[in-house]
Image (cartoon, rainbow, N blue to C red; front, side, top):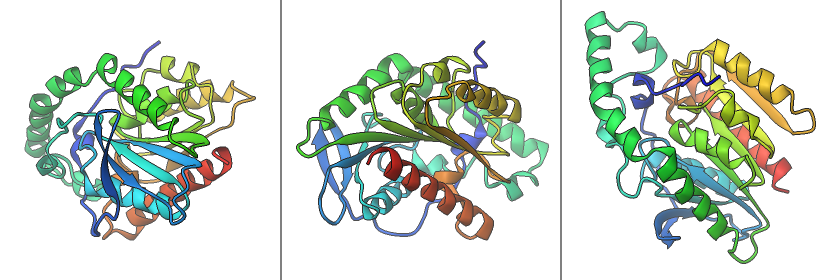
Length: 270
């Protein structure tokens, strides 16, 4: 049965990180794409980043792709929203990190809910699966044709996390989904046929503990399929991409989630 796990104010929370992305912009499969290459320029181990609702220009995801490139992966961040990502100005206007969120008044929470109600539903309809999944799969199939490309992985965050899971149905060689949203349980997971890693926070309002347990039960039945699901203590939705670096605990969780992905892809894109 589908849980219909959807969006909430958490999707509009987080921090913009310091740093300057070092990659380049190319047009690939008719999509503007941020490209971060490893030092040796090898495309043998390629990763496609599937973004959250803030899109491919969000500095945090570009900096993260740069880090994966330093670890030896050829990274692409395609603009799968085609110039229509949620404005970055909304990033921290709706829901702040967990400590601050716990101090919000009922009025603050009501305002946040109203803001989400205005912003997200029309955007989600415009970028529904019937529109977005073909774009993503076409892009992946295109970069598979790049000379030297051996294996391709997908990493996804929030909105893009679900599409990383769907890509693990067979279009990629391995996938890593960080705090996915809008997941269909059990449907999205029953079709997984490639190695899948997941990172979720135990304070994620889009994936409650009951839903996470359901996901664990489903993938545990796939005894011949490599899989893992790590739960990060005191982490909210978006932590792997939008954590507050001023918090030592949050920064460590983000770093550990990055390490989780690097280790997973080193193993299954080898």
